[in-house]
Length: 144
Image 1 (spheres, one colour):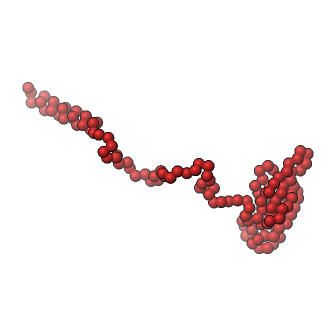
Image 2 (cartoon, one colour):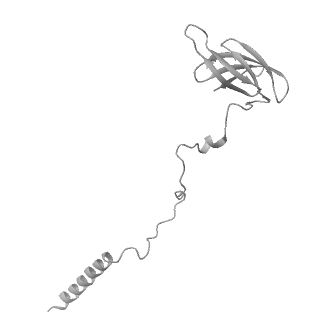
Image 3 (cartoon, rainbow, N blue to C red):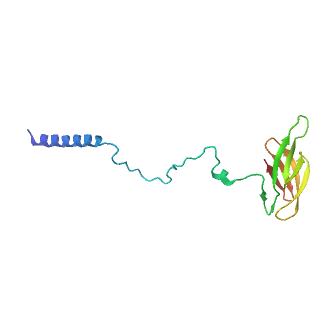
C-alpha cells in the first residue's frame, strides 16, 4: 500500500474515533460552565398579586399630601352618592371630621405645616376621584 494512503487512513480513523468519543461521554458527571450573567435570575418565589417596585411605598390618600412649602391636611374619601337628576355628593374625612361636599361647594382646613387656613373648592366628583382646588396654594388635589 502507498504510504500517503496509510497516513490519510490513520488520520481519518483518529478523527472519527475522537468525534464519537466526544458524543459518548456520560452526561451528569460535571455540569457545564455557563458564563456569569450581569443580573442572575432570582430563585425567590414572589406573590404575583402583591405590589412591588414603586408600588411598595405604602402610599395611601389618608396622609398629608405635600404641595410645595405648605402641606394639606389629611383628606380621604369615605363615600360617594350618585342619584339620577341630582348632583353627585361625596363624604370626605378631613383631619378626622366628616365633610359632605358636591361640585361647587367650599370648605376650609388648617395646614398642619404652617397653620394657615386653606380653602378647598370641589371641582368634580366622579366614581373614581374627587378633584379639589386648594387656595392659596393654587394647586389641584385629587383624592381617590
